[in-house]
Image 1 (cartoon, rainbow, N blue to C red):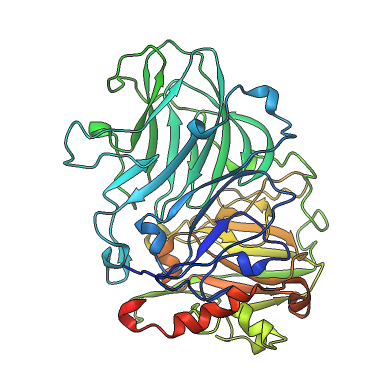
Image 2: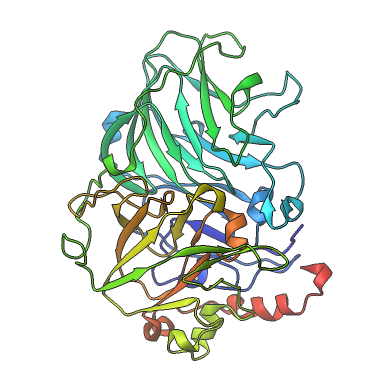
Length: 449
């Protein structure tokens, strides 16, 4: 198991503090075993549902991950719910019965043994009395549940039997209210939903069915938790799956300043980048992923340190061809064609340092420049998908853009946007302890990493 680490604060934009973004070999060297490092940053203008996780190799698959909630004293939806606290956080994760470094065959991940909801779950062959997570509610109250997709691989289809959910937030961004009874959540994504506890007192299944990269199905209470009303008996539910109104991402709309940046038509951006994903199945020792025919290989010197040491252009940064230079205050449009399931699609892509407008979702053929959802993780769809996003280059730094299926990232499915490089030194004063990370890490023996 990897013993060094770094921590990424997923969804926190780190404006003027890219040194605190926590990405090993992009914004810092890993923290050596038996050492420590203080991430000291402010978040003056963000509120919502976030999370933290290791950003070194596949380490977060071994469990280094957790919720990070920033409550909003000016929440525009405060009157829609009665309860929003630790008890209403719902985490969804996959779990393996061996360390992440061993959970692969020929570079491909094994299927996880189970889905964990708030850290608990059953698997095929588990003892019948294996406990499940219980979400307790009182009849007549309304709850804001914060659902966090923490998986390393599968996406989940989430529902609560016989209950509707009104979505009010996606990835830290308020949305116009949208009522569904089922939603698909990809690795790295988050949703806030309001649920009215208005059914008969009893036990109801919470379901988080993984796609085929996991082990789908609900037999024996797998991929499930319990939604329990106060006064209900302490037993497994007997309810049935009744969902028939699933979320379609293109039906989500940003609440504030909903228009996508740029002009409201195809081509209405300053910079257009087409990012083609491919797989090299003959690469040894494992297959690898490529974006525009380049596999991301982590540099030995973090990108941010290269910039602080004098790199002025993307061409100066190593490894070459994995960096895309972006000037300040431009509208960028990224287009990412989809990928067939047999090559790992759909890929959930996460952009560090920014949220973005999803002008075309992976499962849609329509463009929306007027009021698209704004978020920081988007799925790129299957082979007929053509996800398109826009953002503004208003934050200097090296920002990672990568697939959030950690096994795919380990195989090179990433690039770095070198944004406003000339301003990084002036806007990002790194702490002294940051400068000591690389010498300490580089002094470790291979068996100490």
